Length: 163
Image (cartoon, rainbow, N blue to C red; front, side, top):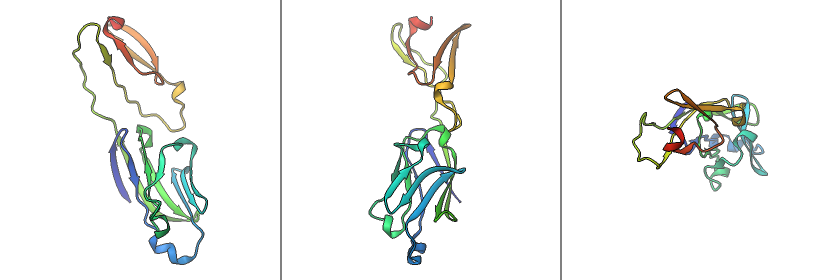
């Protein structure tokens, strides 16, 4: 098992070297999955990506695909990408197992800004891949006052709005 750690938002290369299996005259059928959920499928037709990873998975090297490099790149990692990933040949032979950990960036616990200035209050919440961000709510509190936002919105406000 390979362990990889990346910071939130950074790409992660999930390695899979299948060169030892090229002489078996098999049709290309390589599946990347995370705990039973499709991440990507490499086949004669090309790359297809699982719903939860749409727009974030690329081949590491198209040129080396036919040489057995079945590695993929998971772009724009999020906290819920932390998982065990498997590269599986023909639906039965695990070629590579990768433990990916996505680390939240360091967030300063306090900020000093001028009155009227825009302030960005970062918040990183690990959620299940099966949970919809639309169903989440985040509350910021200051001096007993609560302000409600959803995670889909950018949490930016001016200081007078929260005073």
